[in-house]
Length: 273
Image (cartoon, rainbow, N blue to C red; front, side):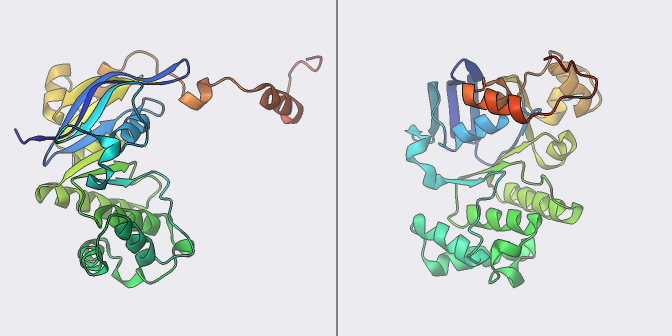
């Protein structure tokens, strides 16, 4: 087996009384395309934020190869968040170049890498355009180019095809597969089981803040004695999914008062309340 590039060691993440993730142990190896699969609120995004160093675990550690805590070695990671966070008044290339300079990459090297991947994503002709008028697909592709420009050891993608048209989603999936064929390491968060099966050679199922399964698609089918990933997923997540974290947080007194005033009564409701 290839060496481990990124490891989660007994990591738990709490937000007040809410346990977002509990006792997670995970090793990501070089050359893997790992699909993080789970419903909304399962803990996928929280885990990605731990892996990228945005969050620190309440207990446990997240480390890169060499035993360095991940928040101290972010230059080895490329991250495409669900919200791309592009600067709308900058062109696509200016967004990418700004990011590359933060990582100490020369403009020549950044341009060469950008052009290499832009050809695969059909983005060469729009690199000089401002991102303000970009479609969702073009913004997602620009964020992907930005994440790849400094040659990261691990690429983390949070719902990379969410909201994309069929053609754009297919282009993104093909690029991820190509990265895997070239020995790249990708962590691919999605709630689309069919997409995970097409793109990933390893699947980690997250449910209610726990790792419920971890293996190849075929091994998950064999372990659950099912014929497709949807059935396997259902078999592994029979308990009721929890609400999202933001739904679990109590409202402040001011928010409760404001909501009480401006939320209209439902038809047929008790008018005396």
